Length: 571
Image 1 (tube, rainbow, N blue to C red):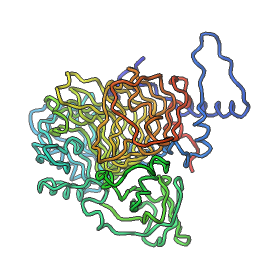
Image 2 (tube, rainbow, N blue to C red; image 1 turned 45 degrees about the vertical axis):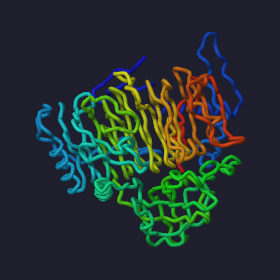
Image 3 (spheres, rainbow, N blue to C red; image 1 turned 60 degrees about the vertical axis):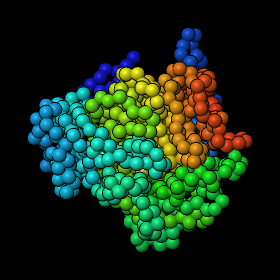
Image 4 (cartoon, helix red, strand yellow; image 1 turned 90 degrees about the vertical axis):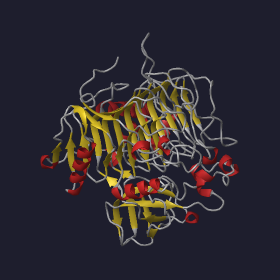
């Protein structure tokens, strides 16, 4: 039964959210049963008894180094902190614009956002009603929030696409492809320095690399080199600690070697990864050096010991020239909440020709968020582009149908998308269009999609070998397809986990991954069949993947892998 809608909760959660007390109680009960070996009798006609997979017991013993399941207990804004920040009342800017949809409100909104940023942060408040925007909304400064009165009460009506506003953002892959198919938003959270270089490159018809170090990736300064360490370690030893401070955001940078052992490691170090041909995967190899942004939690100068707020996602080996570096100035502490972004309804464009009626995009953002946001009639819904440690909560994609309802690319890490929904399209798909779903690509890792309801789409791993991502507690009508250029390499790296997934049309594609993804875990999936599929294994031989409680969903405990990991004792 769906929960009642409220002004600040415009779409029902796909399932009632478990309380912290309830989750702790379940964890305690599991621990007790495990210790004593006791079994609770199941009355006749009762619901199926809860079942705890062996994989969960293994994981709790080695949570940071498990071979198949990644640690994602600190995904999202400020390592999963709730609620989002509320600034002091004297930093609130109320928009003095009639919300009647008659005049272009974008210039005034952008001026207020910029003014709040120059003042060191603030909240721009939109009253209930409709605001017409004839240009995009740009949040470029730290600690700035754009807040509506709720997604059922405040609407931004977007009249022009990014192609009209900025230009035909050409693709680095040639032809007439539009990069607005996987970049940019009509609400765009992107730091000012990155924004200036990005728009200049677009207008020069150059390709603006979207990552944390921009087009000139070799010009960023090394802060220190890093000694060898293992995946799952919270601390590393560095050559020089004098330039590092608690709270600093740094990049851990790993370069591949000629034998591509870094890529092999991301793929799980198995025989299939060692036999794989990497040299001709030019799009994939353009994503390295691998860049992981992380905030420093502590520094011990005497021991030259640096502790991070999250454990290492990979080994640190000397052959990969490991170092901590500077990066493009990140956007931090900013968010958008309580509104609907509706584009004028136009037919969905043929594949890769999107005009850029895109929703909300985070680019080079760290510790930012979206909450209670609906996007309607968009080409692409919510984007995470080289964005990390961000939370998208209570978001919804609805209307005429979209290419990427959610896209996560260019080295996006540690993000959390929870309580999300993708509605069935309101108009039939025009010929030549494409539907993906919850997308991840481009070496992106440790991202989480939790408590979702997808009336269309799929679990789109879009090549570029993303790794260690989790989808948990999701219902999906699995009718989309994956994408990705052949030169982008494998669909999956190691440690993808699908946990408690309900496929309403029984289509296996990209949900049952034990035959596709190396060192992966598929736990709690209803019985599915292979039909209308294009996914094939990239690696040969034994994938060392795990499949457990297949044919079971609601009885799986813990029900939600991310929530259960959050409840584990913090280090």
